[in-house]
Length: 265
Image 1 (cartoon, rainbow, N blue to C red):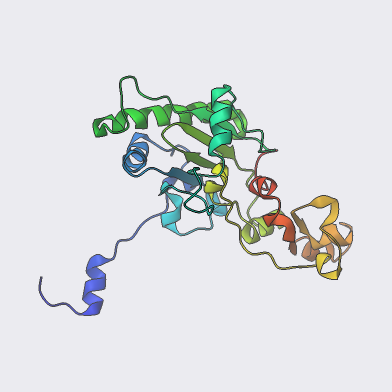
Image 2: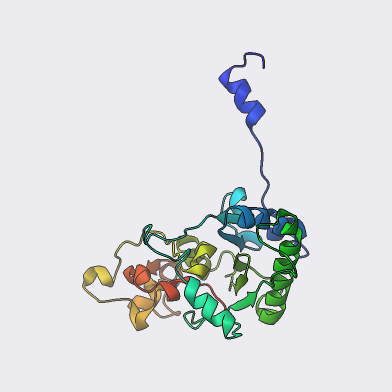
């Protein structure tokens, strides 16, 4: 390779990634190639595949983050002595064995579907990758159908392994609305939260907690200054106050509820 300047080497290695088309195209969905790519890693390395599907102007991430990601096992901070591969492993296995389509731990709309092991396939048989991918695609389509109008054409979080798939429809706020201000400050969590790993932005104390109150009104995790101070809609201060977001310091102590902040009720 000829000698190149640093700038020339960067130009050669630079790859521009466009956001996933799901953001702007209502007909765009995960397809078999997406699941084949994910299953290739899941069968070889193990892990949890995740996808954040955000529609329209509510998208807030780097383009790379709009595609399927695979997080390798173990997916927890419990240390090497833990037999779990991810925090909700036993819970999910129990619910699957019971034929349940949801997890009791999540108090919001979501769908759990098994990924059927292809007949005669072994995870060590790499030729089975496409068959596992087809099974995962079928589970995904079944989950979208089971969620009905709550998921059809809308934003959602997805997590799946070689044996199960979880889907959570998102209640996306209207861009430019006061509620969208909360979305930007406390957006949906990374979908690894669906298997028990909650990664949340830091929360600084605000009023009324900074004044000694135990929490926000009615135990909310996300609120506004207008709600906390009882500012009426007729007040000239309401519009500005309704856009001042309050995030409870309890978000890390109430992980299941935090996951569902933007879920369909």
